Length: 265
Image 1 (cartoon, rainbow, N blue to C red):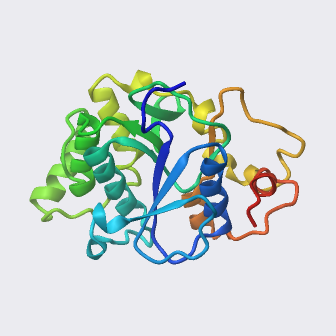
Image 2 (image 1 turned 90 degrees about the horizontal axis):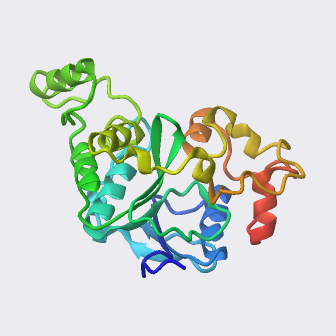
C-alpha cells in the first residue's frame, strides 16, 4: 500500500455548466476504483456523478482570468494545472482520463509517456513547490520564456516574439507553452524524463487511433495491458473532429462497456 496520504486524491478542472457523457464516465471511474475525485469548477454543474467532490476553482485562479485560445480552454487548463500542482502538489488527472484500476504507486513524481521520446500531462503527480511545476507554470504564464534546451530555431522564435512582437503568441504550437512538448523539454533539462511510465500505463491507445475507443474494435477484449492503469480518451482530437461526446457510442465499444460497468448514462 502507498503511504502517501494524498495518494487517493485525484483532481481535475471543468469549465462549463454540464459534463458530457465522456466526462461523466471518466469522473465516475476514479470514484469507482477507490479514489477521492475533486473536480474544480467555476459554475454550478448539475450532472456530476455520485461521489465526485466539487471544489471552487476561484481558490486557485479567479474566474475573471479564464481565457480561450483557438476556441479551446486547453491552454488555460494548463495554467490551472501547473498553478495547482506548484501550490499544493499531489495528483492531477485530465477529464478525459478513464481509470481502470486503483493507483497504487509509491512514486514521488509520476507521469506517463506517449512514446519513447514524448512525455504527456494527462496524469501527473508532483511534490508541492517542485521545480518542474515551477518552470511549467512560468511557461504557462509566458509562452516565450526560454527553457534553455530548445532547438536554436525555437529560441530565436521566442526571442523575436517577446522583444519585437511585444510578447505575441503568433506561431505558438500546441503543447509548446504549458503542454506536453514543454514538459518533455523540462524533464530532459533536469534529467527526469527516464522516470516516466511507458505508454502502456496511461496512453495505451495512440492518438491516431482514438476512434477505436468508440467503435467495435475492442469488442470482447477485457483489458489493454497488464500495466494499464488508465486510458486517455483524447478529448482535444474529438473536439477538432466534431465528434459528439454525448453519445450514444457504439454498443460494443470500450467506452460503452465502461459506461455500463460504472452505471453512467
